[in-house]
Length: 231
Image (cartoon, rainbow, N blue to C red; front, side, top):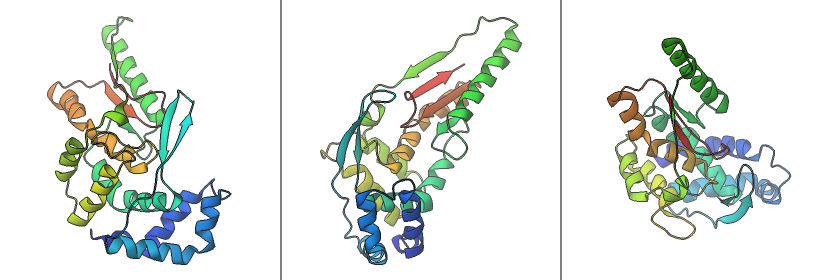
């Protein structure tokens, strides 16, 4: 898709409505709404002309389920990212993922992951007729912070993204707070989708080459941790 097809006024407006939910009392949201039509039009024109640049990231700490640094963009940029994810990014990446890759995918949150794992364990119990069941639980230390940009971009280039879509993708990957070659900001919706894809090669190796049926991976910013489970 071309930028002008993705970032229409209607698509950006829909993204704005999604971003403002539960945040309509925030100052930056109120200021954006004060000149809503103009702000959306300016965003649309800046993106289509490829003059658009991401704003400055704001860092803050969260302490549940553990202490983490969240890097969040201004409201206008979150509108842009949501629009891009909803219209161009989500479905193309989702089609590349295995069924048992959970997290921010539709109807595949924590409940889905827990039920799938429970089902795998029950199947093993019925097969073995005892409780001698072993599973491997792996945690990737500082997963988001360790994602290599070039590796990620090479994976994304193998998907059928247009040149316009890759322009936005490279912007979201490379324009980081510290200009590092690794790491994705935890606060971006796009980072979640990139992180789901990044380990897809492992998912497919376990499922398709090793043929391990009882396997599920859950990755989400709000999860206790990013992990892979093999039952």
